[in-house]
Structures are given as structure tokens and as C-alpha cells.
Length: 97
Image (cartoon, rainbow, N blue to C red; front, top):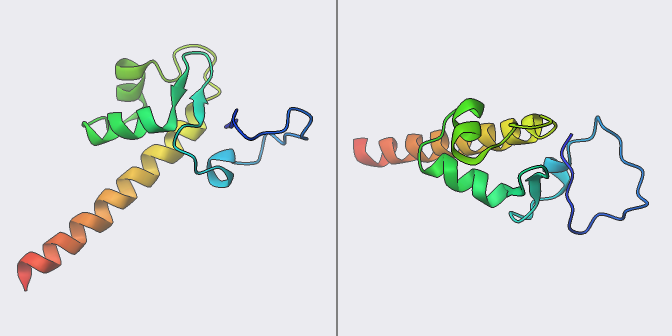
């Protein structure tokens, strides 16, 4: 479960099956509440070379405590890897032409 602390009504009905990563695209969203790690920090770590949850755990402390942030962190990791793949493919096409 991914909880966005900013902009979320404290009385809102939170369904643990909802992916708040898909609903809230604010990069300052807290992904890991235990260690106060934001989506922006996770994306920066990925840009600097973190490619797995274990590497995010080692570099930032993601999923080092309760582990509820793992799914959200994994979604961000997949999103960044997909963005890098599509950007890389576009670059390769430009180079081939």
C-alpha cells in the first residue's frame, strides 16, 4: 500500500488494494513513512544507478522497517525503468538514422 500524506483526507476510506502511486503523481509524496523517504528521492536514487529494491534499501533505507512501502517503491522502479527503456530506444533510432 502506498499512502500519500499530502492532500489525503485523514477521514478518507483507504483501500489497501488501491495503488496511491497511480493516483498521486506529486514527486514529494512520502513513500516510506518509517524513514521519511519521498518519491523524488527514490527517483533520484534510480537515476544514480539503483536498479533493485535491495539497492534502494541499501542507499535510502526503503523497506528497512515495516515493508509497507515495497509495492510503491517497486512501482516507481518499474516506471523509471520503462521511461529509461523508451528513452534509450528513441536514442538508438536517432543514432541509426
